[in-house]
Length: 309
Length: 188
Image 1: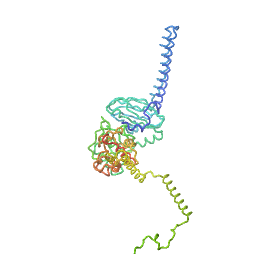
Image 2: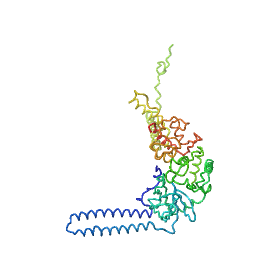
Image 3: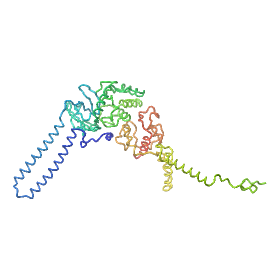
Image 4: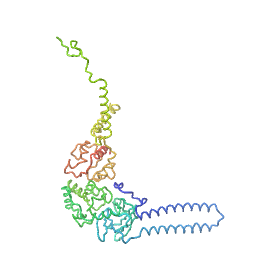
């Protein structure tokens, strides 16, 4: 199913591209090496205790059973606490991005307190600048997880969790809902795009404003279909129809690299298939199938959505 | 009286030696020039081989038929005829192995079940399992390589009311996808 996987860099905590993921990665290495050293040491101690009957039994118990564990566990505890502190440190000047989990897609609002620019299923961040994700859920518990950039954080209904991350490398990274949230939970991914800071500023400015005008009669007809078929009840397209909040914002839908929350490539073919029978592609999705549209209507509305870039 | 019609062997005609044209050095020169010219032309042709070469396509196609026919003669000449139907579905210069990745890229699987293509479970359009054995494509075009490629490239031209969108498929991609589809016979 994961036909978009090859479009992303690895979805892996072992190739860190963010401050938090880097700290987690280092801690993992330290813990693994420490565990190996401790294992070898304990084996050595057992062997020594076996061979050496001269040393009193109490010495082994106090040294191997109390002193050594206290020293090593304290060292590892300090290390992990420092890492945790680095991970959870907020930043007042950070750009706020509000991400709300829905079954089975992500609502994304940049700078919700002032600009409030809405997009969906893709999160753009600047490289080298801290970003605070304000994570919420509109229905059940989801979890926001981009292994290459940051640790995961649950999205809990009625609660806002904050997660500050700083991307260190430009690139496209796959994120995934990490808390079982329903039938299509495995099909709830997204893309985190880390852009160099200047490019991000330009990108954010371009997000403002209305959707692109329909340029050909077929695209105009597609817009008519969109308005008449009732899509606007759930989807917002700035400049065409506002207010729909039950589904993802489609103002720039054609500009996304993927369709269906990071699952399929964005193109007219997949859009048409999605509209005609969403249940095939994403079982349990809230969107109904629009298989009553005539052939040309379906083609035109798909082509129009694809043109919104 | 019987008149011989061949003037050369007519004993009544005076014998002329045949016209030899240029001297032997001249002949050598002409041959050398022609040979060099041919070599240059072949080199240019070989170096600047056109990417899309209809002549090579035609030759390859004919060669394929020739190979199959000779193979049939050599091994199986007693029982029946060569599988002309399978031969007719061969698409020269195609690479069927590119088919599945192309179909993922164009998003075919959101509407069609396609064996061997990742995530192709759509039920919007017909399943493409066994398409090699169908007589018609979309109920309107004969199922030939050209017909299938034409459909893949411009479905709306063939069937204005179709729900299948034009996906901007290039001829090369259509060739590879059609070649892949023709591997999907009854067994698929």
